[in-house]
Image (tube, helix red, strand yellow):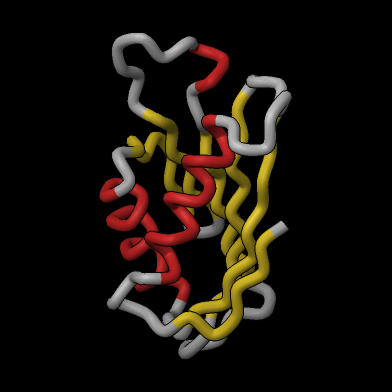
Length: 116
């Protein structure tokens, strides 16, 4: 299973962050399938020719324990069922696309970003 994580701290309250996350994920052609105050789940929209195991799921965990009115930390987990036999696999490509969209989002100020 391919799996990549991205830890972010952004200058937004948790309530505003959730809406911005949904909008950002949708701009990356991902469908948001579940939302709670602490969790957002999105999946890649199936398209012709894409094998099912390569479809990507993204989970976003919002850390309310350290959140303030001005900063919120969240963790993105991008994964699929594909074995990562090469470093530039489909899951990694989606991970990079989402990471770039998060970094370039004009609706928040990125305080900290750690990829792993």
